[in-house]
Length: 412
Image 1 (tube, rainbow, N blue to C red):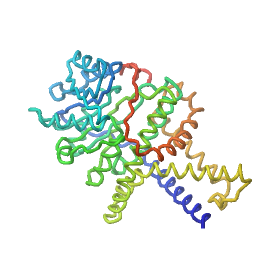
Image 2 (spheres, helix red, strand yellow):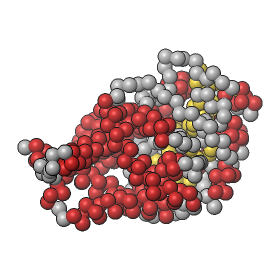
Image 3 (spheres, one colour):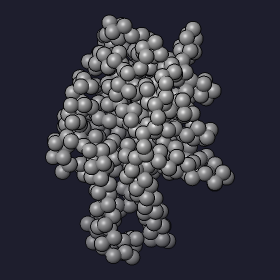
Image 4 (cartoon, one colour):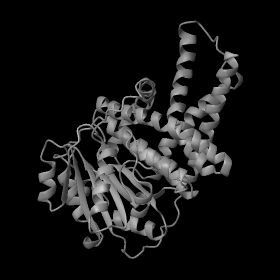
């Protein structure tokens, strides 16, 4: 019975892997660039910040020079429980510093919820809300691209999240490789198939009327994923804009990266528990591949956990108990299939880098350490499973001051 369960779970995981690989093939091409719409939409640009005095000034400078009519957008920085000079720096750039103090409800989700309520009280109402993090840099055409999609009927839009410091360390390089892969072979593939895309926490745009209808209501440790699920349930499918790029600072050290990813996985478990079964049920009743796909995305954290547990069980069986004593799917398959599966997995990341025309020389040197980053997701996810009820928000310190011109020059 245990052998049958073990093999069945392996088959399910293998089918999910084949499913995801098949979808990634649709990211190998890009559609022709859409027509440009006249800049007519107004934007409230929200920046969530907690003690970001080292980096927020660079973003304020960046946002002043967007290729969009200045009268059509205003910047509001949420200075959330700040104890430094974040608010002073924002005001020195002529932007709106909105100070929030609530030590009991800490975190980005709560800060956004508070800011939206403040916005709805203001005399001026905007067509859409754009959200950035304080360590970000936005492409000059970001708002124009959001305007294009809003004019074509999109209600929720995710931009292309790139890395502004991929050469700083092997960890930042690993993040960069992962995000190039996600943007190209996850987000773009689903965009090409008119599927729902998932939100990434920054570089997001929301139609104001939709936010007023739904409310924010996303206060978990992964507010972006939570809001994605809420939208999908309501048949509002987030869109991906490949040309709306935002550059994000990645953690420099393995320790900082582990803390960040632990928070992500803890929140991911919460969202999976809350939304997987409702979305699966809706997908069956409505015959919706889009909702099925999003339900699978919600379950990625459990897929990772099961893969880790089953791999660990086979290693323990072999090393400690001189196995194999466990019947595995691999007992029924030729060796070359397992080797091919590993090879294809590596090839997808390399393919994404080639398609994205990555020119960072150090990143290619750091590729040798990339498997360590991938494997480290397993113990992090395992630990997150047992600490998933920990709702304490942890802040990732940002220190890397980079200007957009530097990023673009390094990209060639």
